[in-house]
Length: 139
Image (cartoon, helix red, strand yellow):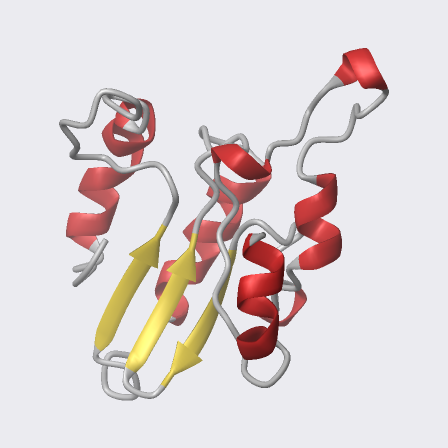
């Protein structure tokens, strides 16, 4: 399984996680009513250190990079906790200290693969101009 494959590496070094469609694990028909439950128990993220309220969106600094992780499958519209957090996060980026600004999320914005085609479109429409304004280097 993926967990066993990654375990040797994750036991000794930090990983940057983002929840995706395979981590939803929402199945009310069998009593699983809390989305992402296995993800939150298996994959620790440093979300509290960046002032996030959930482990699905957070930021970290690694070398010359300021890395922001967003959640494609959590609410991200205006006034949501993720949106509000990101609004407060962008001004914290110090390009002298961390010249690279990288944003990660699971669902691709530009993609021709049938399975995820247009899946990230609403997030792209909401956030893309914001990313341009804040000069995000890599998405």
